[in-house]
Length: 59
Image 1 (tube, rainbow, N blue to C red):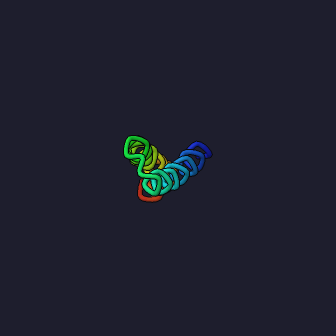
Image 2 (spheres, rainbow, N blue to C red; image 1 turned 90 degrees about the vertical axis):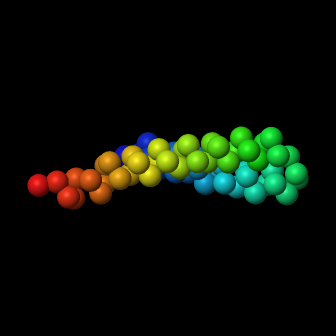
């Protein structure tokens, strides 16, 4: 479960990096940070779902 929160923190940092790179017009850096944010965001939400929400609906 701690892993999901750490990955979520990395996702937030990637989103901040996207904004910063777009301001400096570095499109390669912005694209890399955006792809990283999507991948880390997916895995953090999937892990939180698997650990927290899914057990609530199992019978």
